[in-house]
Length: 304
Ligand code: NCD
Image (cartoon, rainbow, N blue to C red):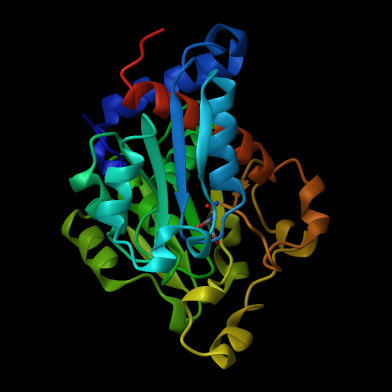
């Protein structure tokens, strides 16, 4: 039995197969409509979510399966003091597969170690968000035809943003990736990540101003400042509008640069940018459903 805790749990070849399957699902939805008949997905979300939870649920419903779960720790037995290990043992009796989001780093891993059904990490604190990374990689591969040989700028909250951490981890396995990290001093990417890049001789640069590096980017990955991970409100207020991508800044970008964003967006991308053909963040949401469908089939060992 396999779980998904980090994007590195799959080899690059396995990811290629997963993305091939996701693209086949995209083009032949009807073929997959009953592949999970009788199967249940449990979504155990101890932290807020719109996209990830609903996209998992839509994915399972598209496959003919059904969904149970909770979307708030307060409405689960966690409020009574139940441990994640006990909860997953209980959920294992009800469902065939579980997607779990938790504010504590490592909680889905603890659950996986006690589970008799596959567990998918749907985001653990500021640590990892592997299914967002699968979404990001599928979007890049589908819109550009391949993953590799590009410069990607990651902008915003690189300290607390788990989607950023997972994506960097995953991209280092592809050839010719150059990273540019754009953040205020206080929200720089953690040193365990830059140490890993140094060890692997992967080129990266850290800058504060977005304008200065914009013309070099093939992808710009924008992120929101992670309000819920700040220790004090004052710091959040000071940093929240540090970057605002607008039409004027987009004039500096390459004609075929793509803007990605895991969403939710707060102020970091002005709505006027949404009509720019380079804005790929809503397409990205759609790819998130296809890749989660492919993931559910893969972890359940269902071959179509
Ligand atoms: C992200 C998350 O939860 O980490 N959202 C998502 O799942 N697409 C990004 C965020 O909350 O900023």
